[in-house]
Amino acid sequence: MAVDTATGPMQGKLVVRNIGLLLSGDLGRPILDADTIVAVDGRITAIGKAKAIDADKPDVVIDAKGCTMAPGLIDSHCHPVFGDWTPRQNQLGWIDSCVNGGVTTFVSAGEVHLPGRPKDPLGVKALAITAQRTFANFRPSGAKIIAGAPVPEKTMGEEDYAELARAGVAMIGEIGLGTVNTGPEARKHVAWCRKHGIQTIIHTGGPSIPGSNLISHEVVLEADPDVISHINGGHTALASGHICQLCEQAKGAIEIVHNGNEKAAIVALRTAIELKRTHEVIIGTDAPAGSGVQPLGILRTIAFLASFGGVAPETVLCMATGNTARVRKLDAGLIEAGKPADFVFLDRAQHTSGKTLLDSMALGDLPGIGMVVIDGMVRCGRSRNTPPAERIPEVVEH
Image (cartoon, rainbow, N blue to C red; front, side, top):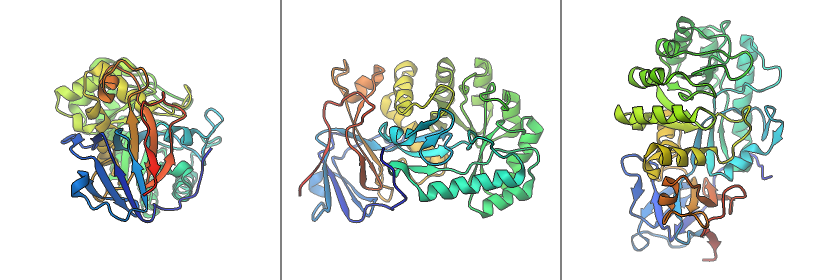
C-alpha cells in the first residue's frame, strides 16, 4: 500500500508523448487534437502536436504508447475519516485502491463514519477542522482529499459556520445525516453557509445509516442547496416523478452516485439532458458505505451511464472531471494549460468486443488503466484493479 505525506508537485519538466486520444474533461470540447503534453513543476504548460511543442530538455518522459489520456477522475461524494482507513468496513488502503481506479481527487460529503462522531457544535467544528488539516498534510498515494465537511446539527448557529469559514472549511457534509432534516431548518443552515462562502449539499432519498433521515423532494426544494447529493438515492431513491421535479425545479447540481439506484440514475441523466442541464451533472461513489468500497466506482458509473444512458463516453467522463471540478470549485478536472498535471492513461481492456476504447465503454466494458499521474508524479503503473489494458504507457529514457 503506497502512502505519503503531501510532498508537493513534481519539480521539473514532464513530457508526455505519443498520446493516441486526448480527452479534455470539458463538455464544450471533450476531445482535443493533440498527441503531446508538457508540464512544468506539476502544472500543464503546453498541449498540442509534437512538432509544435517545446519538448526539449525534459526531466521525465512518459511514452503513452498510443493510449488514451484523460484528466484524473474526481469522486464528488465520498466519506473518508482519518488516514487510508475506513471504519465503515474496517478496511485499510481504500484510497490507494481508488487511485488504482483512476481517481486523483476525493471530495468528502462528511466524515460521518467516525466511531462516536461528535454532534455538539464544538465537536462538529473540531472534527471538520481536524479532518481538513489532516488530509492537507497526508495524501495516500498522492491523492488529493478535500476533507473537513461538518454535518449540520440543529444546535449549530450562524456563528459556528462563520468560525468554520474563518478556519478554511469550504463545504458542509450532507444535510440530513444529522438532526437538520426539515425544509425550514435546512434552508436556514444553507443561508448561513452561503453567507459565509461555504458550499452546501443535501442527502436525497431514504435513510442510509442509523440516525440519518428521509429527505424528500419538498425538503430539497425548500433548502435550495448547491448540490443535490445522490439524486439517485444513497441507496434508496425518491420516486421517478420527484427526481424529475428536482431536475426541473432545483437549482443545485445533479449528483449521480455509484452506490445508488441504477434505474433512478438513468431517469436523472435523461431528464438533465432533456432540460439541457448536462453541464450540471456530476458523479461520485458515496463510498465507503454499507455495500463496501468500490475502487472502480467512478469508472463503473461512467461505463454504466454511457451504455444504458446512451451518452457518449467522452461526455460522461466530463461529468466525472470538468463538471465536478467546476461545481465543487476545484483546481482539477481539465486538460488545460495552467491546470495540475493529474492524468489517467486508459486503453481497451484485453478481449473487449469494442473496436476502440470509447466503443468498449459505450458497450459497458471497463477500460484498463495503465498509469496514473498526480501533480506530474507517476503514482500508479498498470492498475491492479482494472482489467488488463491492451497497451500501457511507460517512463522512458530521454
